[in-house]
Image (cartoon, rainbow, N blue to C red; front, side):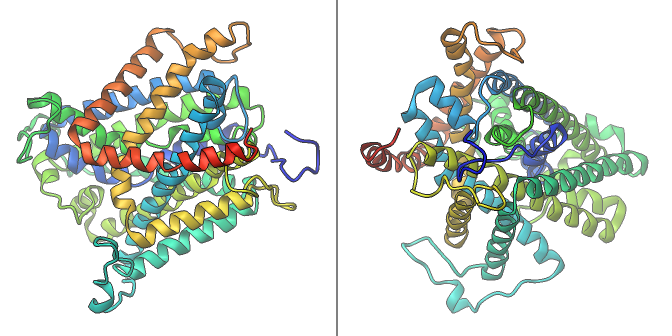
Length: 471
């Protein structure tokens, strides 16, 4: 941190509850409402579906425990970028930061904000352009004017939330604290109403139809491969748990509060996800969940079953609020990575500037909004989001392995939090991440290759910035 009044100084304006809310607010978006139908397709068994949520949550929690130890050592703006710089050097840290900017964080913003706009479209049909405009195609696959009204609302949301976060971390943090808490309360109400309605049947938990996929995945035959595919769906709903580290320079008492927020937040979300999917399966048997189409949302159809169209509209409104909040948490946290890179002179000039009045990384917020909006107009985020889990787990695994690196590098450094059952838990997480990446390459070689190519596009920039004074 610089001296008071510096143009590169951020303000520590977030306490423990705000940090906790940022963790679960980053995770609870659209996945909890949509992914159960795909998992029903893969598994066809309610017990296996719940087990998939528990296993994915447990693996995520192990990753969070490993990350928490590192966060207790390094609490600076940029989170994982700063961690990787200490673990593996500037080159690997830059690769992570560039991947976050080009694919991981901006595509997440674009996709979740797009779900928000689609939710609004349910209540008020948004304008569309004529077929002659909507069918215009660039480069063989980009249709910038398709669903133009939805895209404009998406960009409008990104712009609005970027503006609000320019006003300061307290504004963005307050929005997340209020809205994330409201979403969780509504989900808990859904759980209570589902089990209290009498409209379900515990026999649903004993029904099994078998998978409905025409083709088994390449990763394995029978239930092993299908269970892996279900885990991938669940991991999308758990994605975002590590975003809190990005705000290391703006959280009070970060060496203790960030580890606490990570562990409490992930554990809490895991509990909520298991309970809400037990409620969904209590109301709707697995064969009916398999019948939910791609144009429908599983949670909406579950609520419609015992609360009618009014309940379906209410859950649609909740999804709008949830995606609004999830978009906000990513917009709030991710620019701190680009801010930290620019301070090292490894990103575009001027991105390390802090707003003179609001003490926010305003330029980093603006460049993020610009690129996310480009992704919205191209529609390419749909393809990019399929690569997010693959890309994210490369860095999740590297972060957990970094626990071993820092234990050797800084053996005497005080650790406010230590990952339990060391070295077994971080080692198990690293091995899982390695297996997931390898299986993803086997399952989707072209998509995986495209993800690596996109992440590698930053290499020319890295060598240019490094040659021109990058630290």
